[in-house]
Length: 333
Picture (spheres, rainbow, N blue to C red):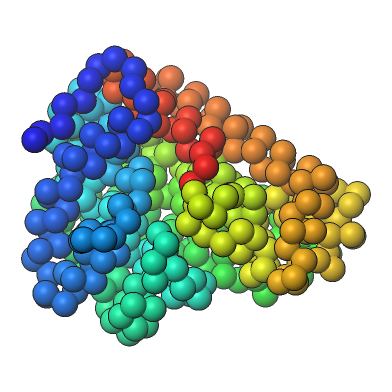
């Protein structure tokens, strides 16, 4: 059945469900063109198959479709962009799990644990190549995607390097460095999704560029919300162990904000101590780290909304886009 996007305001869940319904056949067709073993691993990574938990939220594919609709085209026009960004997102998660040593994703073994590190790297590379090929015939599509990928890699590199820097002092990670990292690691692909949809929908480049910037702000908000969930999220909802980011010593925004507070000196000995994550989480919240992260997320969402409101977008799609973006900073998983 073909998904029909309604003009009236709907929930973010409806937007995501309808996008998934429209994109899933094209995504499946693309994956089916891979080597059978690679296609099997790709299907596993997407959560397809009997007994598997449903795949990810599908935010990026929904943004691509809304980008097309917002500039006056049909949702179907954005499908190639939706497929490309979903493939890139899956590729990035496969490699991210390996780099972080995360053994589970969506309540089952991560691909590298299920198939081995080498096969998982290869599967990720295959998804990356497939994404580029999907946009080969789209004017400006590969250039836009490659720029987003370059920013994503820079953000990922910064995120990994942050772990080797001291918690405090002149060499410590600053909030501005965090924002730049988050925009690259998370925001670049969200912005790319919106811009690709707009390009496929026939929008002029300035409109696509503005949508890209809006998506990047939303991506920073998304990452900030992810940081909050990484410390205080409920495992039965997020599918991740509570306090995982604290045990790993990740430089997340709530931690950076708490360290800059008067209670920062009390927090430092608790960071990276596996048996003191609950105590660290409580101190971070008391020091204002959680509130600071949520406030920063709201500020970036306000910046995204301002950009969107300044564009000549189709009202129904613009409303759904606002609904979806607003949900990113206030979520439980």
